[in-house]
Image (cartoon, rainbow, N blue to C red):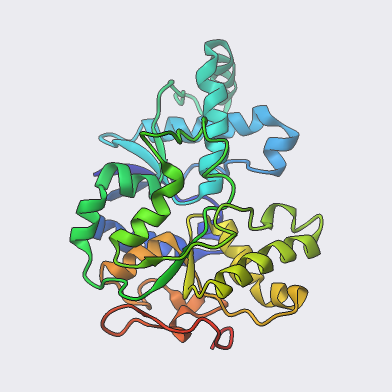
Length: 308
């Protein structure tokens, strides 16, 4: 399956292990990735809040680049924040032919020949795994089942709400897909209070203590539920739950050593890739310190020294 691939900003900057693990995983999923190297930031947060039209123009450019990829069946991203922000922009662009023409006219001034046409399909990797590849096909590709691994799903904000824009309904229960994928890989799903809550990243520059309290609470809840690790479809969630975990532990005044895996890393491990190929050593809380990946994936107690 050929896809126009939008890795996003963060996966090539703060979390390069995410971009690298997706590239390593793609052949095992029979995915041909065509990176949108000329694409710009989706504008989530600062740009979108201060100038929505600029954000829409940036995303229209990305969508237009994706539509130029010959043979691509859809556009795929690996950042749920991008999914949410781009989905909001696409909703506005698709709703009005006049507005779309206005944005395309602006786009043509800097990129002659680029024009977004209504109807592009843009899916996060999580959605693609379930809806395009299929759980049975994914299960058949497993080479190292996640046997006894207790995994806490963490969706974050942008991929579960608002439900209508994100296409979450009875036919597409996308707010259950992480659980389904974990089970298809042979893991055990752990229910805990933070599954559908904000990681705290959006407010970290405005109120760092509150942000770290949110992260620490979720990590503590997952620890209390005896999760071996948490899996996220969003690199910004990964930053707040992994990179900021030592600081969050101090704020909530409890020891925390919860490994946070990117979705492609979790899938990649089950499909036979090594921890080194997936750059698990790049994490602040090293998954290899608490999980034995030697033959089968077997969960171990989650309370060992961070970074072990």
